[in-house]
Amino acid sequence: MQAAKLIVIILDLISAVLLTVVITLQSGKSSGLSGAIAGSSESFLSKGGSKTLDARLARVTKWIGLAFVVLSLVAVILVSAAAK
Picture 1 (tube, rainbow, N blue to C red):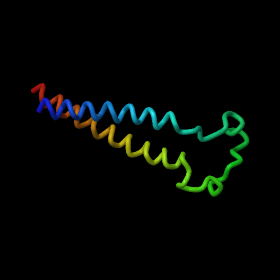
Picture 2: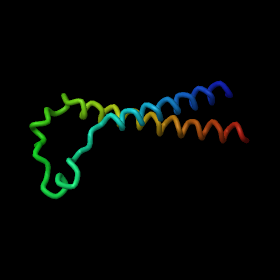
Picture 3: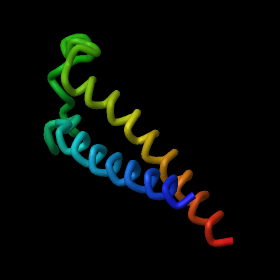
Picture 4: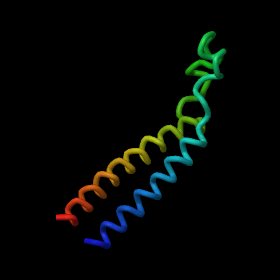
């Protein structure tokens, strides 16, 4: 039980670091205050759909975020089970 708890916590820490890195690599969705007021000059069709780096990073962020949440819940369950 201790080995499983340690593995889950290490995987959770790795996913947290990866999530931080992937979020940091993403570019902003607007161009500051002028983009919020006047709107962005880029349209949805001109971005290239899922072929852009930002789209790939957004997809990876969702999966790593999901893994982080699941691993965190499993870690809490394992720690609370070991405390009983």
